[in-house]
Image 1 (cartoon, rainbow over the protein chains, first blue to last red):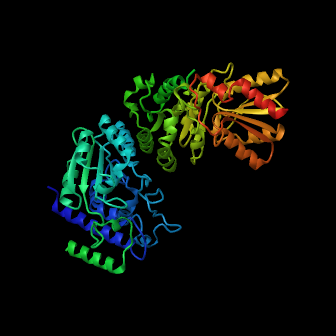
Image 2 (cartoon, chains in turn blue, red):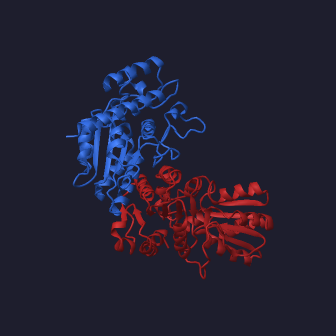
Image 3 (tube, chains in turn cyan, blue):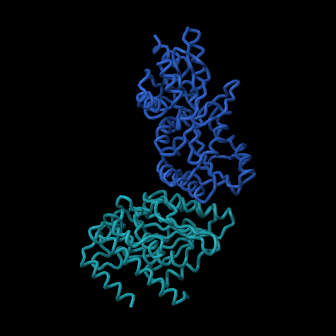
Length: 272
Length: 305
């Protein structure tokens, strides 16, 4: 059972990340809000508990945001970690900003620049191979979107990883059911997802990606005895923004002031 | 001899490197064995199967985590199918993988145009920070592999149907084109397996009273700008010879420099914007596309006359 205090702390972090995301989507700034909101709880667990991205307590862990358009949540984590100023969120992607619309090496703690989908898992495999060769305890986490799984290169990588063992590799699929224009099921169905990964010889888990207890519980089970692990996290696109969540609009949008206020109110209720 | 054979024979030099440098690893795509490397260092030899995108992504990850990955992959497929991984995961993300690419140029002549790598130089040289090498003989191939290990950045090494050039042991300096024959009427700038044909063309021209300078353009990027400008200035007639489309490869690179320098005329030999539809052994394909010694000599002479 995950520690209740830790759960509460991480839920607080997730709320903080969502607040930052609301700031980013304010004043006409268009961001990939939906996918950024859907990964907020996962990112809170990864950046404030599971991963040691700075190598403070041991070997540095690796994090690749393969669904690069949701970099905003990572930027929010950087603010929470004190690596950047929250004031930078009002000038996203402006001349001189280090916060691009996709992970860029200009931003602190971004270790791999992504943006084109379907690249991250192969890169993660290479990193995990190197760390395994070094005998390091370092973990490598690759966070992908469900729409991203339509890229063939993801399945090349999925086929590859188990051959090399790679217990140190964790893939997470943010299964928010939407891609840019419509539900994934309408554009190109990818289910049954868990069966697919299992048939590729991965250790699989399916969780509610907004339930901190489930997230921590499954992370505690990592690494598996043999082979890489994938977590399929069922999430809601735009989670935390009433009227936007679970709609196609969530993908890339800015929010009206009243929408921001309403969402902030909802977050306050939730954190009570 | 097939570039395949020479590419896979790099297992020796890679094993030597690996003895000294624990970070040297090899990533392959159903190509091997790469003896003795694969025998001596089985845990540092990763065969990821037929999956070019994954191949380069994995290599980029290894480099990111501090390894020096040498990738062995078929030139037509690794240059085109994993182009974006080379561009984004390696160049943009600053991961210095080293790609050894056999089956380049028209080496796969008898296999048909799917197996002709005649766009790879153009594609690779477009990528920022990329070093693009095209050795002219087997010894130079090994020297190119050794040189690649010293480069801080990604490197693409093209292995074609190269023949040993008798007595050739020129020091391999990236970006410097060795002058193999001096001459004053025309300069023949050849790359890869075409260097051998260019040398034969030199002798044919000599018999006809034409003095040809022959340069081995083993570095496509960085290219020896100075040597090109010098040839333009001193001779004024340049012929480029490559197993590649005339657009974008060696001929394209030389054209860019000559246009900026404003000296000399250029004739580009290579494929003229159409696939080779004939299926034939390599020497016959060379004749067909005008890249054999006789055709090169005739083209060079046409510039002088």
